[in-house]
Length: 292
Image 1 (cartoon, rainbow, N blue to C red):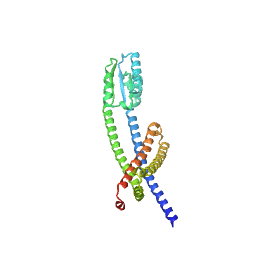
Image 2: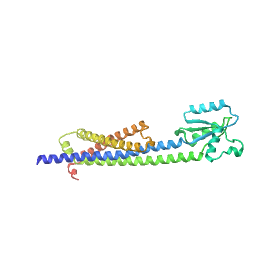
Image 3: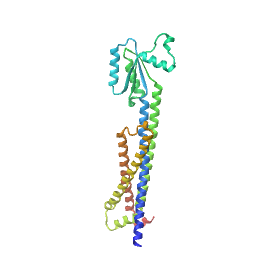
């Protein structure tokens, strides 16, 4: 009978630990998915921003040395992703391909200008930055016009801000829910040991001494839960990378490493805080209150 009861208690304890690990793993896995969404949303937004082209049209009398120096200065600037010189002949050829006929035969001359197609790094693609750059470039005497799709830049910036805001709200809400769920699982596991806690307290054990094994155990459970979540997240990443290589999910390992570290630390931190307050609650209860 004694062995049977002992085995039952052991199975109950393992079941309690398993439920805590599973709860932590599921919640942290969802947080990891949201983190991946945040990272890749920024990647996609940056990709679209860097496709915006600023066309710098040059006057016919612009000297070759001036054009070369301008292109060199643009390439050396920290805001520049690329600066490609496009001759009027190349521009005419591209335009003819787009419209399906040679417009020069109809006009009798090439009205297009030599130009430099400038693309900026994503962080600098804002209406203010581009307006400032366009104004500075337009002051040069050999530049005829600086052209870009101003409404598109404004719309893109607004949409990126809006999406980032709602993702931030979703992250905050999900993190709060994660804390509540993990806290509830840990409190339930400690609730089953409330009489042991009170017995230890009655025989003279200090609160710190009583809390220590519970905190250490649940920190370990938090670590196991975090590792389980990270393994599942890695599996999802590997599957997506194999089927959608264009996403380049493993390209930025630094950000991915930071996300993994954040999930692991969050699992430990939430377990630590939840265990501390859960044990503190039962330590402060009177003996007769343990039955309710």
